[in-house]
Length: 397
Image 1 (cartoon, rainbow, N blue to C red):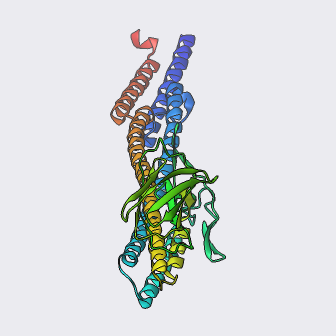
Image 2: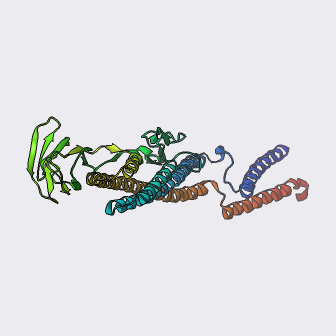
Image 3: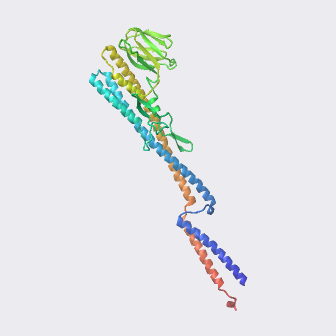
């Protein structure tokens, strides 16, 4: 009988220990709100939770990158809008100067305003973000991109773009280089330029420039010379004659797929250079405009030269405005992509957190039920052992 009692006691203590351990675990789950505190308590759920934690951390990093990139792009868009407004104002001044003769005082006022707009444009091109980095420096974000040197504006940045990762396989440029925005602007009409020679004696005025047939234009350089007031010829860079013809005021000169209107009264011997468009800094365009406005216009040929230079400046400014619009369109598309990506990240994050909660968080209703069950089991075991322990054979004699 003694051996049986010891065995029962050992079994009771073992069962009680297991029940108390389970009871303690349930109490811990209720107190901490976590289904497990150590991976060994639920290896499968712990492994899944660890994987989800990694994804959430990655998504949060992508989200932060998207926010930072979006802030820089929004700042760039504002700067581009400001630059566009400045150039638009300069364009209005050029139209004003070209459409009506200005006296010396008015021209000085126009020159003063253009110079002021140039300084504003330099300041805009040197815009910094909240972190003190230059928006238009390319990848050299700590180097001031535009500085004054020898009377001109020089670009010190690079042509790179910094890419920000916003998804495992998606990178977005958080800005554009100052070279792409302000330096690499095609002059003329973007295809070719027409410039009157400095020594022209007549009053020939270059009008609209048009690429009539891209298939015929070879991108070469030509010189159009008036052999008489009503006749012209075009020669290539080697001096070979490529076209000639008669002309009346307002007619167009056309050859090799290009055409430009010619007004006024050219004199025999006057010439015009036709060259392919090249990259030209916006600041150089504006500096040349200032130099043009400061030139004398005492003679008819001087006024014709001034008109031609103003027309060239107008075309170049239009090219710069068009380039700004293209860059702004690119910024807008990237901002839209970032907004879409942020929305996707937020949605995915919510789903991952829901899944993580299902793996890690305590189900209080289920835990309290188990707690009560374990308490009942422990209480019943204690009561039954107490009753069995008190039994004696003499009770039945």
